[in-house]
Image (cartoon, rainbow, N blue to C red; front, side, top):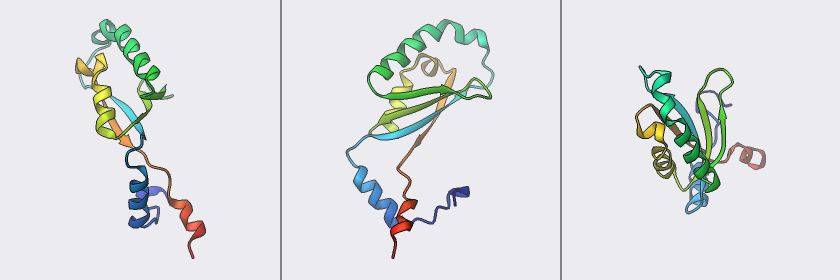
Length: 121
């Protein structure tokens, strides 16, 4: 049901969800990617400013949740913004991103539409 993106939900149902979301904030999943070839020492001068900027985005309601993966030091953020582009602009304001040490995979999320199958004729 979930593997490979096959949820067997019609494109029409997904389009309807998109229309309902217009003009509203959406959840964004942002997963950190460290730039290859960087060293721990390169990060140190930016860490306090990074924490400060993350705190500002958290207080502003842009970053809703922040975690590290349990298996490695990679940040995983749940964000809220109008779209992925707006979330990317906020992430670009992070000192570690601005210095080229990290980037993020930015994944827009929509509510799971599969429950419609329970009510289909």
